[in-house]
Length: 247
Image (cartoon, rainbow, N blue to C red; front, side, top):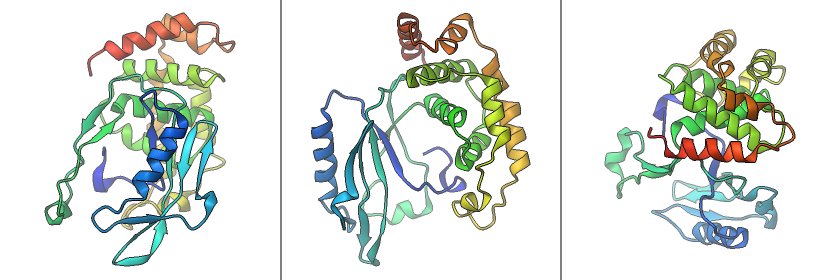
């Protein structure tokens, strides 16, 4: 959706619920969708535990099969009800691929989070864990023009919503530079064979490009330091402002 064939492979499909549907109905809808074949693709569950509820939504790990691969491959699908999108959701055309012209159908535009919100989600993740995939994604994002103020405000809200420590560039930087859990081999398995990730360069690019996270407004600082989660009116006001801001 963003990088096309130049990006890394993803090991799962993550979705965010944006309606008032109940968790039970959401789960049944997911299972009903997977029960139907689509252009030769079929899904099956080998174990009862291959679909389940989580604290933040529902998930399914079906085996995807098609005529060229009857044994199939297991995929991971997760739908989160943790929080609603902040920015408006729009249907985004898929990045054009050479094989599209051979398909029996037109690839659909996909309802997607605004890119600034996706980046803010990555900043939240990188602030809470040290994971190779987050570092790589942020490093690739850093090559693009960024709406820094919007991204920072969104990241502040994302971390405030998590109920833990707020956004702090020093903590974010320490996570990025620490990287005791970084697994280069794991990343290489998700990249093309001609791609050779440079860990030091990625760390330097992310630290240098995301220094704007330290340049907070007064409202952002207030929320970032609100460990007790008492500033809900302030958070709601910022959320409303971000929802109304044009991309």
